[in-house]
Amino acid sequence: MYVNAWPFDGDSRAGNLQRQRADGRVAFSAALLDRRTRPMRIQESGSMRIRLPKAQGPSIEAVLVNTAGGIACGDHFAVAIEAQAGAAVTVATPAAEKVYRSDGPVADLSVNLSANAGSHLEWLPQETILFDQARLIRRLDADIARDAHLTLFEAVVFGREAHAERIENGLFEDRWRIRRDGRLVYADTLRLEGSIADLLQKPSVAKGARALATLVHLAPDAEARLEATRKILPSDNGCDAAASAWNGILAVRFCAVTVEALRASVLPFLLAFRGGPLPRVWLS
Image (cartoon, rainbow, N blue to C red; front, side, top):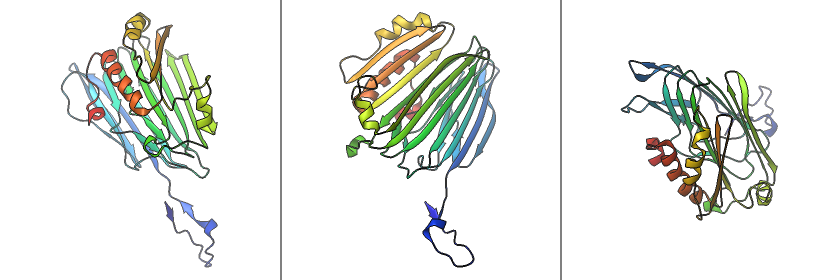
């Protein structure tokens, strides 16, 4: 989107056009009161909103909404979520997030999560879809207490399948850092730049897959869940998956040829792994 920014001297050169970029921020905190998780603080600015559908039970479900309608070149978004001691919070999005083409500027999204003593925090957005020439840097930082439960899930799709789109040029950087009691326990960075479609063909990258997802679960019993998790992994449906566990961390990777194959594998897996229904916005 462009707006006129003509100087008062009448100069009408196209180089003086200035973009309007989205800048959205959300901060949300929830606490356990009378055995129920309740919202304590909500701050919103720009194009980011958080909604709290009514739900029964001890946990709270928060839905992040980007009213900008997607992510474009140069947009900036920041999300901060806190589960106070004993609280149970699930954060989801109502639909896939689209990242549009850029002629140079890089969009960035930063997510900061905090899970305090005895809390349960789930970060479960729906997939991110990158268009050809999209440029996005995404950073996720989490700080958790030793006895907290944290579940992170992110999926990314490279190119619009309905358009048979290849990402001939683009940038995608995904950086995760998790600290437990202030100590770094998990660090993972994926960076793809240039002809992403060609990079995904490499066996060491994705072996031709175009839909990737990662689940990371931290909890006192995370390692003990490894074998049970492997039993519910998908097989023979166009999606490869594997799980590993160490030092109180359980990690699962998914690699699918299409977004349909990814969702067909991920949805039943998440249902079984969580032992309950998915956020309602996933099914709408």
